[in-house]
Image (cartoon, rainbow, N blue to C red; front, side, top):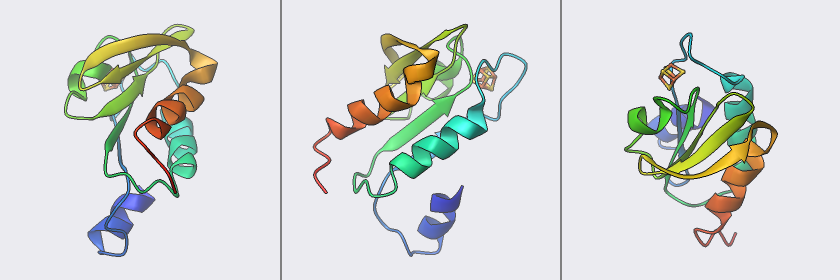
Length: 110
Ligand code: SF4
């Protein structure tokens, strides 16, 4: 992803690290579209947190348990999770905004 390239080049030292699953037959969302929206929404976020975008609720939280926060897709309803634990169910069409709202609660002030 774009940010990872900037980080690896040393241009961007702070800010979220966005990870996503490689997708497979279980994937319930348009993962790359959603990851792009999250990346755009976090462009000015100064927090050093790991954010996961995962394709399915079954394996997503476990596969991304090292992430501070993340979302995973389901059949019409996805989930928000933190450190591998499910926090709440979220309608699929509100996954991105719910994730951003939660990240803003980590005292994102600039
Ligand atoms: S999180 Fe789900 S969709 Fe993504 S690779 Fe794992 S099993 Fe497949």
